[in-house]
Image 1 (cartoon, rainbow, N blue to C red):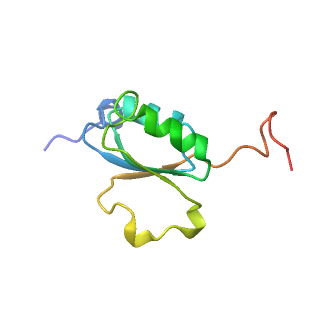
Image 2: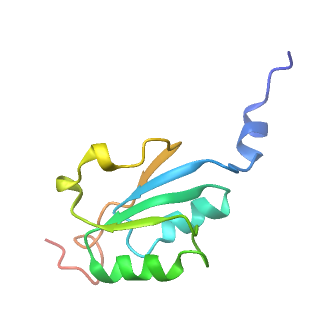
Length: 104
């Protein structure tokens, strides 16, 4: 069996791999992963406007099978989250570091 080179593995698209996204915001990180071949099947954020944006982008910029849930991740019931995912991603809140945030 021929040993694969690391670069060969990195160059292959992630077609068919499913991901779950936390602290999703408007979905920019998810969009990048979708362009690499992943499919976002679950996304959550505490911000209502972010969730509305995600729902409006479902089927256009993001997977049409995405389930968007507005929630605080501290109160999510893990037993109700998708179980068959290949990757979990998250964009931790940057408000305290952002120039537009409170920087507390």
